Image 1 (tube, rainbow, N blue to C red):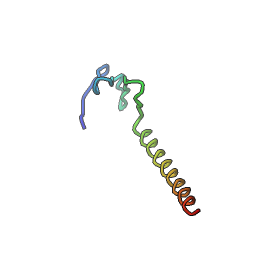
Image 2: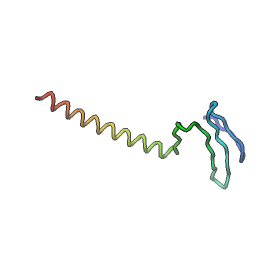
Image 3: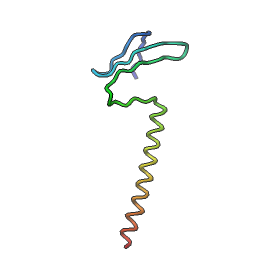
Image 4: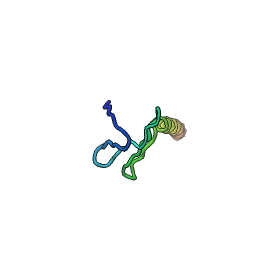
Length: 76
């Protein structure tokens, strides 16, 4: 993990297309501004983990249903 120290209005570049700017530091909170290509999805980590979990569950349900249909077709 790279750890950097930045102050308000200072930025970090990720490649050529992404800029993260420190907008405000207040107590234990840091407000970030993120400039990135419009097609790039940006999520808070806890939301991203929830989305991954839901996608995993949905794919397992699909695979279970697919297996049932496949078994039913084979038994005919």
